[in-house]
Image (cartoon, rainbow, N blue to C red; front, side, top):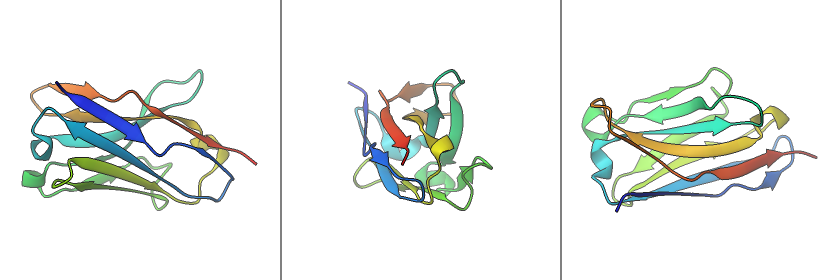
Length: 119
């Protein structure tokens, strides 16, 4: 069965760093676009970063709000996608979700991991 399991969320002070991981199983990971999304209380879920499939070269894309601070990467041998988050700000506080998707419309979501940035 398909599973996306996020981990790495925590409470961190402003300016700190975290690395989120999303371990995938049950589908052909390398053939899927992987992305990270986040949802803060009272707000809509938003795209944070994405990385194309192995066959498409692993190109990355970022929301303007995280450019230069966050880095998405994938390890196709480990079926895992990462989100390295540096220079964290209070406004980065949210539940972070990973998503696997294909252009055909097929997609899967993880259950989310909480990131809280506060002093």
